[in-house]
Length: 111
Image (cartoon, rainbow, N blue to C red; front, side, top):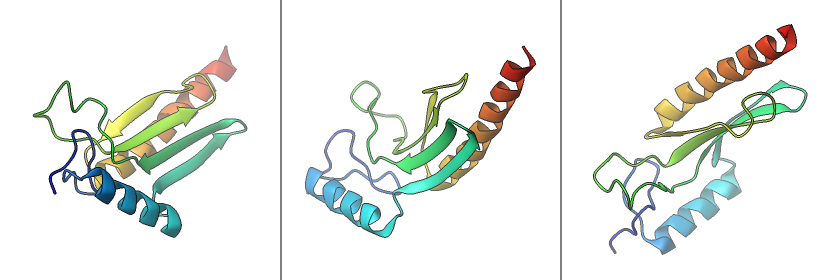
């Protein structure tokens, strides 16, 4: 079965809705959906997950899919979001956004 626009597997391969759903259910059951979760401070967290969705696929169909995302919740960078092409890039990006959230918290406390 061919993949649906915007739905991707762990390596960026196109997936059908059925295959995407089955993979998501498996990852949820095993706890592998979330790659990283860091509490930066009280009320500020950074979370990295596999979504399997590239929301820009319809607009940019020839770019490398970005099925992973990291989001900051709380603090000066609340709801900042980055998307990644691979697990390795997502793990590196998670650490970079943890540092960015910490730096933003420190700068905000200095004011």
